Amino acid sequence: MRRSVPVVGRSQAQDARKPRYVEVAEALAEAISNGTYPVGSTLPSEAELCSRFSVSRFTARAALGALQKKGYLSRKPKVGSVVVAKDVQTKYSVLVNSTADLLRFSGSTTVRPVRVEDVTLDAGQAAELGGVEGELWIKVSTCRISPDTGLAVSWAEYYLRPDLRPIVPLIGAKRRPVYALIEEFNGRSIVKIEQKVEACMLPKAIAKILGAPLRSPALRAIHRLYSRDDPRPFYSVLSLYPAGRFHMAQTLTRET
Image (cartoon, rainbow, N blue to C red; front, side):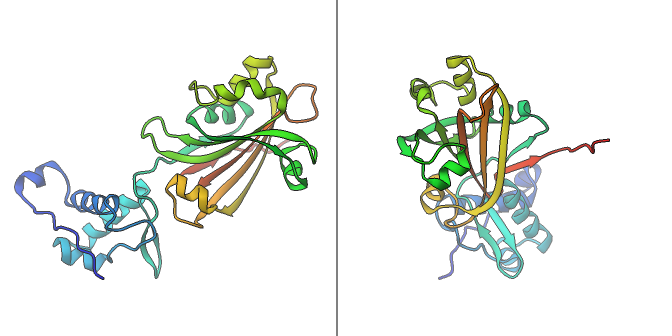
């Protein structure tokens, strides 16, 4: 079935306010937001947009490019413009050259707890998190929220050793990163972070919470945080970033 999007009328007043491609982009964004084009669907082709909005191919392409830049869609050769988000998503960028840089990024979003549970680590979890198989840890599942838009930008699971249970009620209650709560609680400063990053498919349940396409690509990162004179991490974090919402850059200097 062909979906219809109202043609935006053109006037001298509108021409003075905003470019034509912006009007087209706004009309399409509204259609995405109200469900005319749900996540996973494909927008009309550039040729169809030219006809529908009475614009040039250049204007149609610019409108689609603007929506892609804002995070509404992904443009793929031979597929078209696929809707990947119902609302504007915030892309977070971080330049990481030190432990301080990584910790600074972790404090740039608001943490919203989703559930808290005790978990007994299996062999795979123990290897990834730096724990011991059969050991009891506290798992706090959260969404990281953009303070600017209020939208979920990533999923984070905090795995805490049992002695940190008193800080669990504070996670999300105050706009403070988890590491700062821990340092204040036990006076143990973070001196080392081990990082493992890999690609994965976003699990269905988490994709639904984050408003991302089901089984879409994501970045999976595990961080193990250590204090001084302790061979084991006192907490670890598993984070999932849907495609297009996070960018990390590093500068490496060759040793002489």
